[in-house]
Length: 350
Image (tube, rainbow, N blue to C red; front, side, top):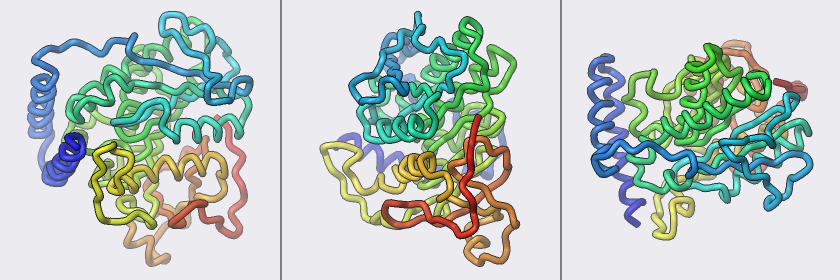
């Protein structure tokens, strides 16, 4: 119950803090420094870094797809990933999550079914994701650094091209994906080709300077799917291509009432909109022709159907280089994707 109360308080502070959008970079920097100091106090006034040995990675391939058949990856000797022809996908969960969340299994299966050359690596940082939200959010930089250093190691020592990597993260994991990409860019001078942020966390990130959060410069393509922007998610455009299903804040089929459950975050209705991002993406990877979005200046304009550009993108397209904000409708229950007449199935590669 303590985590639920903290969560609701954070959401309230987040709504208040969004007024900082009108403030200058110097004020944002001051707010970020205050947040950092508060996180250090919660940690116990120490700056002990995240320990790599507390981060677990689990590899799945076409040859070991069953949930319990994963291959553990040793950060000091990641030999099972030594395949220059593999497309390696890192999946990163959010706050209060762990490797056994259902969407890890669902997204892993979707990628392996889509292309047998995928290597899917599930990142488990649950020793830090189950701290208070403030402290968990503070550890995202270190988690991103560790995964980013692994990618660089694979690139330099196993000759796996950077173009073979994809990073996908949800909520705090979405912010971590940005820090992964920043570390790769810092160490190699090159950008990752693509990352996908599924409703990246908003609280304590909206008021950060751009370089201290997910932003469009992190990778060549930064794809963001907004489903609970302004509450648990980051609402403003922060990618090269931003998708706003149903306007990006509230999703059809999700009840508006919050019913706290002392047994855990994932059993409360208030999280429904936030979780829809990964539900949509799992379905989009499996059925890339069902999430057609239209480029538009706002959800209100999109709703008119007459005030938008005649440009379309697909949320499941893994090679799109389109830029801008794209809006789409979904169904209120599975299947969420709405098949559009005349929109042919995309064959995607990266």
